[in-house]
Structure formats: C-alpha cells, structure tokens
Image (cartoon, rainbow, N blue to C red; front, side, top):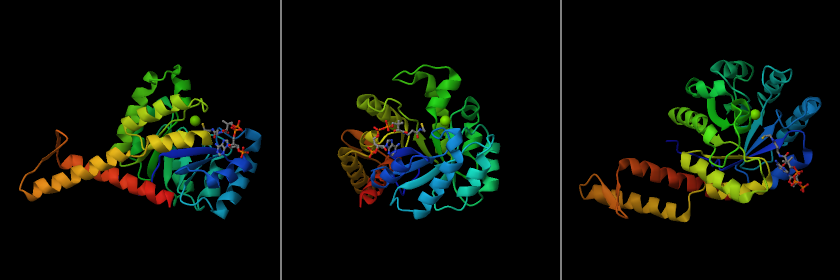
Length: 284
Ligand code: COA
Ligand code: MG
C-alpha cells in the first residue's frame, strides 16, 4: 500500500488551448491538473496550445496542485515535439495517451528521460497488457480513459459500468502490484451531480485514488467522495490505539466495534490517517 504524500481526489482536465480556464484553475480546489494537448485540443490549435502551455507552466503558480501534461501520441505529428517541449518543465508528470504496450512508454522515456511518466489506460490492448505496462520502471501513475475504452468495446453507458469492469479491475491490479497512483475515468454528464457522486463512490470503493474531472462543478463531489470521512478517521485512530494496547498486553489482535483488528488492518488505518493528513496539508 502506498503511503501517499499528496492527495489525488480530484484530477481536473483543462484544454491547453483555453487561456481563461488555465487562469481560473489557479484558484480551483483541484488536487491535480491535467493540462491537455491531446483530445481536448483541435488539430489546428495544437502548436499554439503547446506554446501557451509552456508559457503558463513556466510561471508556475498553481500552488500545491500536481501538474501533469497530457501529450499527443507518438503516432501523430505532434507527440514528439510535445514530449520534448515539456521534458525539463517544472511539472510532476507527462501523461502518455493510449498506452497499449511498454514500448509506447519507452518511446516517450527516450525523449524525456528525467520526468515521471503516467499512462492513459484506454485501449483494449492496454487492458490486456496492463501488467507489463504497470511494471515499466519509469511509470508512476495510471489514468483510466473510459470514454476511449467504451468506444473501442462498443459498449453502452450504464451506471454500474458493467462493460468496463474487467478493464478497470485489470488496471487496478497492475497499479497496486507496482505501487502506482491510479485515477478513475471521467463522468461526462457534468451537470448530473447525483450520477457523478455514485460513480465516484463506486471508484473509491474499488480502490481508485481519485477521479478525473472535466468541469469545475465536479470538484466538490470528488473531493468529498475520495477523502476519508470523519468517522473513518476516528475508527482508524481507535483501531491503532486498541491494537497497540493489545500488543502491550501480549496479544496479537484487538477487537474494535465487534470486529477483529490485525496488523494488516493497522496498515490500512495508517494509510487512512496519512491520506487525511495529505488532504489537510493541501488545504493550508
Ligand atoms: N477547467 C478549468 N476551468 C473550466 C473548465 C475546466 N475543465 N471547464 C470550464 N471551466 C470554466 C470556464 O472557463 C468558465 O469560467 P468563467 O465563467 O469564469 O469564464 C466556467 O468554468 C464555467 O464554464 P461553463 O460555461 O459551465 O463550461 P463550458 O460550457 O464553457 O465548457 C466543457 C464545458 C465541458 C466544454 C468544458 O468544461 C471543458 O472543456 N472541459 C474539459 C474537457 C477536456 O479537457 N476533455 C479532455 C479529457 S476528457
Ligand atoms: Mg482518450
């Protein structure tokens, strides 16, 4: 389990071409921002967006928010120049789209040797190769691209995301096996708060660290859903206290609220407290 030093509850996409949104994001309560050069930017705007983004990121006033740049694929005319343009920028990661095999990451790693890489997991081949992709030595995070995945599967939207579950599960396993951050896909209906809440809670319960978002109106819901609740924090504290007391009394396990507490539960409880502390630090 990763002891996170920063929260990833809300990861907001911003089209790299939208100056107003880029400016606005400096005030928004997002844990991380994905500055997009790929699908949110029209082909004839790509070079100008790259230039604008390089200028905006050089100013570096996004506070504690993590900064991730999503580049175009290396099978397009823009991908290599995108990677080169941000290879030494003050950012937290380059996000590589449509990663289908570790070779897709190798290609970007060669152009940008000193920046963390994250992978968009959004192709059928990517799902099948998730284990090998997740083990790539330069990879630090995964982002589910559920719209592209649904498109390739030919599946329909359902609130339970039945058709996507296999892919989501494979990527979660690959991320956890390699101690990577993993962030869930977007919820397209950005005015449907109830639907977003349900999907955030589903992703949280599965083990995602947070959700990618497309609109500022989605931030509060994701921030709440992916934060430990007050009662979870209190339970974690009580479990840790009870376990230490049991240990001091020569016992290996404790009982809290009628449930057994073993060493492995303490690892989870400590991770909960670490997440709460990271969120509190973000708010300062
Ligand atoms: N990040 C930061 N600010 C954003 C934003 C975003 N993703 N989306 C909208 N805003 C800002 C707008 O600039 C506007 O600011 P203002 O009123 O202060 O000028 C405010 O939020 C309200 O925007 P609104 O009018 O409700 O949205 P819209 O109709 O202009 O745009 C979308 C709707 C979905 C097109 C837009 O939110 C968007 O482009 N989202 C990102 C899409 C994306 O990146 N997709 C790729 C990954 S799936
Ligand atoms: Mg995509």
